[in-house]
Image (cartoon, rainbow over all chains, first blue to last red; front, side, top):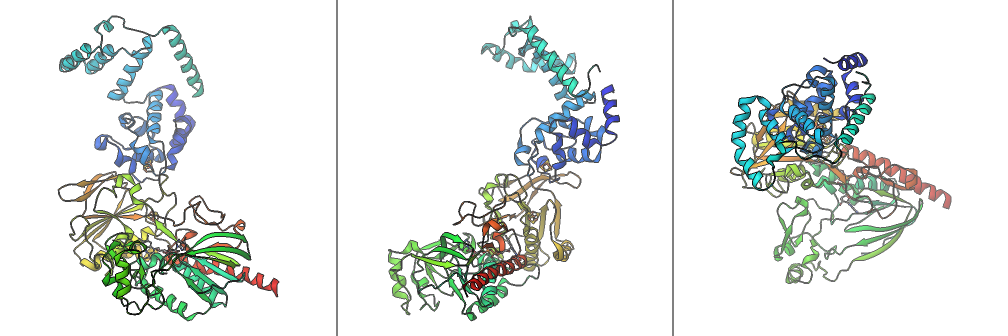
Length: 208
Length: 428
Ligand SMILES: Cc1cc2nc3c(=O)[nH]c(=O)nc-3n(C[C@H](O)[C@H](O)[C@H](O)COP(=O)(O)OP(=O)(O)OC[C@H]3O[C@@H](n4cnc5c(N)ncnc54)[C@H](O)[C@@H]3O)c2cc1C
Ligand code: SF4
Ligand code: SF4
């Protein structure tokens, strides 16, 4: 568990709703939920999440900090926006889900083996290296996410799609060596570092 | 129409529903001169469309009948049907009001024998039954209409049907040359009692009111239950005419929702509880009612009623706002999809029929008032000094049940009486 997590536990002393309101994007909306259930019933993920949004909001109010932040639920959100469109109280549910996921990640509580979380990290690492997404490397990294033999199997399964993409110039095998990049990779990385610094300062984590 | 005499000591009441009738009668029975205008051919308003009244479950006929008797007996009250207010100028104690009266094509000679209706062939959607079923082009608005006089639909004027109707009438009561009439009157105070209308259910897209035959509104269900209604009192599925015995009720359909009406419509919880008793009345023990709700708002003394319905083993309550309705193509059954709040169980429940407990909105939308008035966020008329002697009564002031609409109408009558008394005092 990170120092930052410990720091937040001490600061909010069991008032998890307050913690969410101050630290999670759009968190101040959580208390507006009237527990009608429309969001949960509208989610295309149906029964596949541990806790649908309505339940997550109730758990936050109940102070179930650990269960919420380590849950994989927020990571299941596909941003379809069905819930936002239908919520009778106008809660920006999708944004809150992403806000919670981001916060859990910062605290070091996000589930380690959750595929969406893993993919998000792969995507980020891939993109920030050159300023361009390297489709080939990203794809392969994704296939090999769950180990080598699993990766080989998936690659073989996807081979025809890969060939098709190559033929229609959607995929370049040369990307394997280096690959294309934006004009000023160094500059981009400096921007990102600065953004991280500002964000860290904002959440009181500088030096942490 | 004979001369309408009015002075700035006259009170104008607009809308002849239960609230408008009450306000008009209270004022007239205090000796004030009252003109009551109603845009429909009959007074009665929405109450005339109910099968039974909560909380006592008596027939609305009783409530209406008493008022009609009071109306017939009172010489201070002048009723103008098929009339609307087109413009208002002036101020408290002295308003100039323009009225427009549509032709009824039937005079006071009418005995309501119904010969004209038998002679006419053309049929139109029956508005009293919310478009369920048809009525003739010459018709009595409904069995308890007042005035008890037939009407010719303007769409048959100039056709053979109009001539047939005229020839069929033994009392020479049909006048095909009637024209719209404009009237100017002066009044001292205005009571606005134009009531409510059901929210447009088709706008609640996930519920598919416009796509699925077996999704109806609570007002339509009310008409179906009525023996004088379009199905003769049978609760039938519109898709195949089969009896609906497994009925779902969806609460807050269009209410308490930022995408629709923000307010709680207040009466729909009670209306649903009442409607579950219709099922028991018709089918005995052979029915199933499922009420999907956010929370049940059966206010104050009405809680007893709620407890009684709760105790009915054939009525179940599911704490969940239904997320969407789909249709089982084979059976025509609407399937309700959602997650319940007590345990977060996911459900997909088929029912024979779904009744949307539809919300109430003001019948006159903001921007269509003949004079500037202060409205609240939901479009109901506010009690506000800036409104001068323009007072709302009944559901034009808020979503109310009959009991509260009537109380509120009496209060408005008193306010209007104070204004015309002041006028009278200064003029002596
Ligand atoms: C499904 C359902 C069931 C209900 N059941 C019950 C129940 O069991 N018990 C109960 O207490 N309440 C019940 N209610 C509520 C009840 O219908 C209202 O309280 C009642 O209708 C209010 O009366 P009102 O006179 O204010 O309005 P309305 O009944 O709407 O009357 C308004 C009148 O004004 C006229 N009008 C409209 N616009 C104009 C205009 N521009 N110019 C002239 N005239 C105009 C209309 O034609 C109408 O006659 C129910 C409501 C619903 C939706
Ligand atoms: S739809 Fe909105 S109000 Fe309803 S449970 Fe979900 S977040 Fe809460
Ligand atoms: S009365 Fe009941 S059904 Fe109607 S809006 Fe209020 S809570 Fe919803």
